[in-house]
Amino acid sequence: MASEGKNLVGVDIGTSSIKVCEIKEDRKGSRSLVRFGYHPLPPQTIVDGHIMNAGAIVEGLERLFHKVKRRDVALRVSGHSVIIKKITMPVMTSAELAEQINWEAEQHIPFELADVQIDYQVVSRREDQGQMDVLLVAAKKEEIGDLTNLALEAKLRPKVVDLDAFSVQNCFESAYGEPDPEQTIVLLHVGASLTTLNILAQGTTAFTRDVVNGGNAITEEIQRQLGISQEEAEAYKCGSAQGIVPDEVPQITREVVDSLAGEIQRSLDFYLATSGDREIHKVYVSGGTANVQALHDEIAERCQVDVVSLDPLLVAQPDPKSVDPMALQGRTAQAVVAYGLALRKDRERRPA
Image 1 (cartoon, helix red, strand yellow):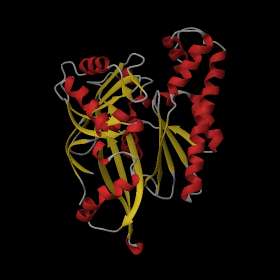
Image 2 (cartoon, one colour; image 1 turned 90 degrees about the horizontal axis):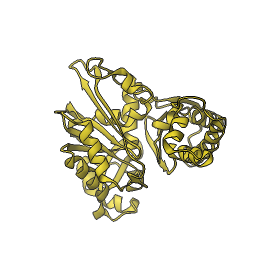
Image 3 (tube, one colour; image 1 turned 60 degrees about the vertical axis):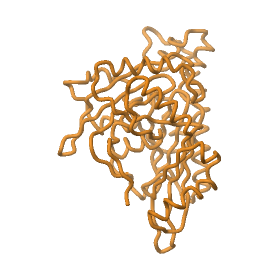
Image 4 (cartoon, rainbow, N blue to C red; image 1 turned 180 degrees about the vertical axis):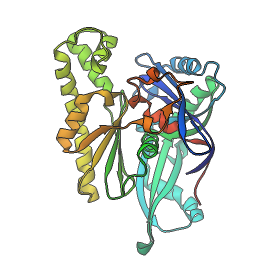
């Protein structure tokens, strides 16, 4: 998408918290983070991607936007309500593609077309073979509607709804530049209840998958085995607990992380086996669970690959006049999706 106009405010409503980022770009293109907000959500607010406690989300949004004028926002959807498929089609014009895309979607999307919002983008053209690769995306209208209604209730103006995987990719490309077409990069966003995998090969999305597992599994297992509260377990997991951490915590964390790393390894193995790609060159991890070092270590060991945290501060540093640098302490990995959303503009158009 080509974009122009002002940056939207990025609003990431996750299972365990809401993150808000606002980025300002000057005429020379240099960026600064002029607002960061974080609001924890009570347990069971969102379960399996379904909103169970709309009131808690609206209240959180109202607090985060209290006395704030800029209310044009970009939101995100993820999980079961979203399908991303890369399809190969004969080379055609934009007008022909617009006419053809619904028929293609019917072949590839396992939902009723009336129930989904369809979008698409040409990612590569192979004129010599008469073919082009198109990224086809479908998101359930009901989920988009639920999300935008919450924002409207909090007196926000939703302008864009993006996907987790693409928001992380947006942040990655702004931070590190366009991916090297010779390298295969994995963007791994490990949230509280969902892990989103986006593999970039030849500079573009080649494979995506959601794994229904995330940081909550670690917290729940610590809570169960030690018989403690959710807050205590979360503090032990994040390394933010006061006092001595019980000896069992690292072992419990490793056990749960081993299961998640196994799922990730199977997804990467499947991609390598079916794509003809020979190797993964690097894994960038984001999301709240990116702070768990055991996860980095386990993926690096299982997949024999370099694993690093994706750093959104390379996109835009906090403006000290409006953002307390301490507000982002320990939260940069959680802010990645909100950063990616905050890079979206209020006027966007499909390339011709």
